[in-house]
Amino acid sequence: MDCPIMGMIKLFPFSYVPRGWAICNGAILNIQSNTALYSLLGVQFGGNGSTTFGLPDLRGAEPDSNTAFCIATEGLYPERQ
Image (tube, rainbow, N blue to C red; front, top):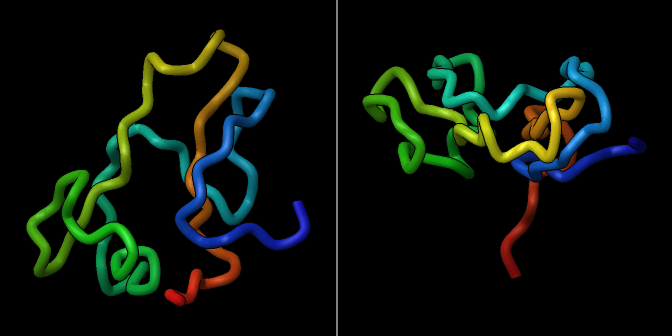
């Protein structure tokens, strides 16, 4: 993929996580290491909002076990209009 929009979720047709993406498994991330992604997601998927935030948890929503929903952790920052 050329350059995804940060925060976009994509179903990949394989069971590993590509570089620049994170699996949507509800993981808790450090805000300080992921400030741009945190500014988009906030704490709507978990975390304490002062040091951590959560990723969406889409486990079980995949059509089969050889696919994975991932969220772009790098890429273009979506600007508001």
